Image 1 (cartoon, rainbow over the protein chains, first blue to last red):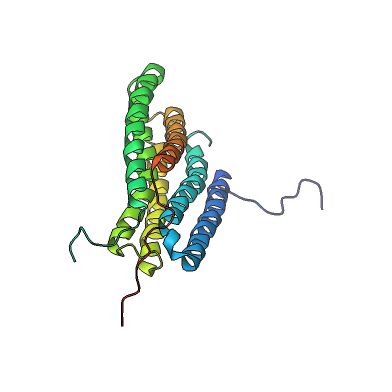
Image 2: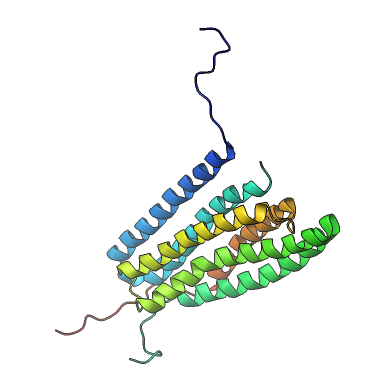
Length: 77
Length: 152
């Protein structure tokens, strides 16, 4: 087999992989935030108010990363 | 049961405050973004500044709005499946909408992609800062939402 043989070829835009990667982290992050909130409220229901606000901040920070990741479509390509 | 004595979580005022702060910030970003965008890329820049600020606010506000809605629907019961159905369902819907908008706006002729991206990032990061300020200013009691067990 010579050095120039093409074994496999991919077509399309590699940025598509980036959108997928941008979705993985925040999805796991939000899952952890929500799961831990459920755990905490189940343990201490009287703290629900504070935990809800903390969950909100956690979700906001986690999803911001995904927004910026997906919005890079505007400047890359 | 009237609306006044309906059990609500004590997080609602903080979330409402963050929505108000976020709306104020996005108006400021829309003004500055559209002016800078108009200077950089004329009409498409102006529109991109407005769209970016609007998108940044809507997508961060959906989180707070969905928690408030879930709170209202489930009457403050965070351990109800409907609560997380609404919060996470809104999250999923928001991302599908965001992806569709990004793919639509990318090829639109009336949009300057770089101005839109920069405005969007500033709106999202500014929104986070404003959320933190709103939450730290809100007075949330340590012990809240404790309900007496109803007699059998």
